[in-house]
Image (cartoon, rainbow, N blue to C red; front, top):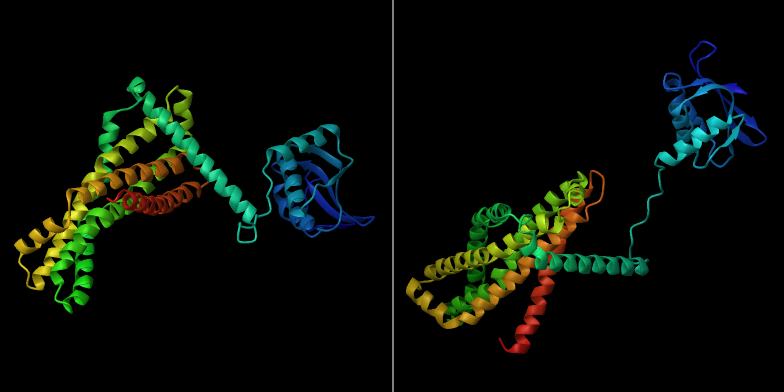
Length: 377
């Protein structure tokens, strides 16, 4: 038996020695294993237990006079460093019972799981089914909350809707205008260069107007709503979930879907037409600037836009924008309510809300394109 290095202590102070016993590594503890005595033994005990990996580990506690939860925590930490439970030798019944309770109370490190990749299609399939099930469940809860909203008006406050509408719509308008102007400018300039060869630069107005009204206006507005607003929804609700404020609402008899989700959903749908129209108008201004540089007066450009675009193009784009807003807001709120625990949970939910909102918007836009084509719109 060899004693691990330590300072000289009184007889009742905690000590630790390491010994080999029939192929097993024995950690022999003595004295008082309490909060005052284990500090100097922690590193030597964990190091000795870690060095015994692959061999049985014994805890000789026959000379231990006192052991509290701090001492039991030291023993559990040594077991975790070893990677397997240790065999107790000479432990009193009360000490063994205390150690068992501490083992159950303390979290144990788990082996990191490999990320699901191409080699695990079954896991990917299960994850897809789980995500689809969660989405369907959230959709059902949202529909029920909307149906019951007239009976829960005390939970659905107009002030919350107006605050969210201000943050999602009014404060986003400068970004919408800048982005729309640049999109119209770039699209018109890139289209005018090849069309100039055929003397058809004026038809840039047709291309940009129809593209903005039918596709780019609703789509880009939804992308901005997803990156700017859905992420905020996920972060706000996710923080409330981590702080157990959502659970507190349920405990007080208040419906989180009505108080947290519906105001954000209504506000997003309310401001989306304004964002879409603002982006489209700014894009048309950018297009007019380019055509003016090519020598076309503003009146000619306006008349060309009126001839090319119809009311159906404009209304169809607004219908798509409303659907995009509802989907993006729902995904942001859903990710916030499904936030887990830990310091990274809110960030993960926010990222998932942005990615999910953009992907869902593009998929929904493709579905609308097929529907409009089949209907001849």
